[in-house]
Every structure is written in C-alpha cells, then in structure tokens.
Image (cartoon, helix red, strand yellow):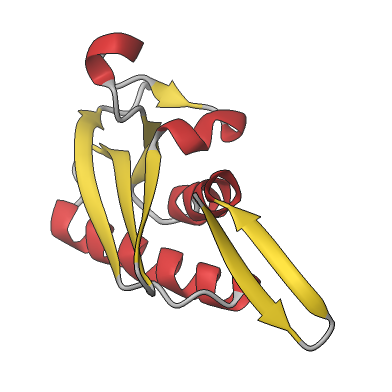
Length: 120
C-alpha cells in the first residue's frame, strides 16, 4: 500500500517502507529506547534489535481511508519508566512524520517487545 499526495507541482507517491524507516529513525532517537524489534518474534528470534536498514520489519503502517495508523515494536532500556518512553516515542514519531512528509497520523501504537539491561 502506498500514500498518494497531490501537490501543485504534481503527484507524490510515498511507500510504507519509507514511512516505516522515518518512524523507526525518529523512535530510536528517544531517551530510553534500545532499538527496534521485529514484529514477528517467533520467526525472527526473540527481541532481536533491528539495524537501520531493517526498521520496516519493526513498524507496521496501516491505512484506513484517510486515517494513517502506525504500530511500532520497540525494546526499552531497563530502569526507564515505560509509559513515559512510549509517550515520548508517540509524540516524536507524529511530529517527525508531520514535518518531514506532511502526513497527519491518526494513531501511533507502541508494543514493548523487551527490556534490555545496559552492559557495563
């Protein structure tokens, strides 16, 4: 599925993989996030941390009419308040997608796939 935007200069097509990559990049910049996790843990391994090129495996973009919904699968750092981290990720992803792509996001759903203890 793709997102079609019509501007004065022509038509713009944005794929879901682009939205996923931008959303994942915005999420991992938030405090308390260790990384993105795969949405298919049974197939891909338990709470595997995804690299930048694989963010689309940890973000699901759903389009229902004019509404855009994003499901994100993340791994948080031990000792952080999970509800605050999730709220920060939601705010950051909505802001980043609005500013970079001009998309209005209806919802950002956060799924915590794991908690990692910092290695010292």
